[in-house]
Image (cartoon, rainbow, N blue to C red; front, side, top):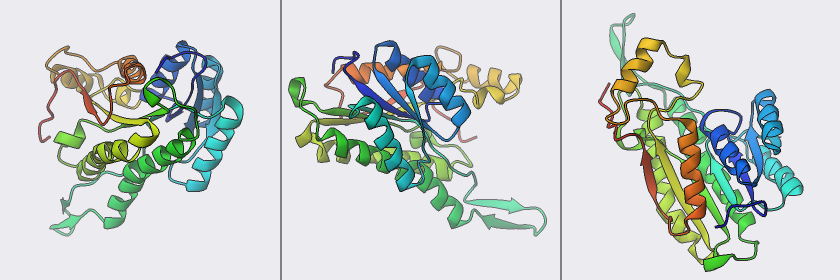
Length: 260
């Protein structure tokens, strides 16, 4: 797909971190970008900086998502690219020792279901809404009509202790990719996911320096945290290269996470 000002894109979680880097990378190539986020102040600021539009969207809510897509399409036309970075989840071990009762307690099923809703179900929601709109577009070279990029995590393959919710839900995101790519092959919509390793996002950079140094040292090469713009660069390559389809791609400096 040629990246220029004829394209429009939706980036969820675009107010910060990997989503912001993706929005910036696309906008720098002339793409009209709509940012979906619940952080209105930060989202408006990023949209202003890149010449895009902000849509206050809660990815957990179907009506909110549909309204966001309607607003984005009214401003920029039907998107050909969706980059879904937004998520919400809870932490918890399957069983954790409770010092008060001197017994093991499980993480409530409701906490698990919340994480699945905020990661896996939300990924399907945003991707399927985008695909429905993309299917109406005229075909480009190779019959292509659109691209969906989902965000998984290296935890999808080597989740650590305490990541039973996050890791399994992110594995589910990877599980969406191939069947969805096959579902959408007849309408020319590609589906891929990126599994980022340890990235220097604002959330991660809030950790103490000694923790950040230890995390950087655990990366085989290069021995540092990933840069959000490197994630954005891969989004651009997935957009350009039409032969990327049905792929789950690690972007991690060759790290393999230890149990803890």
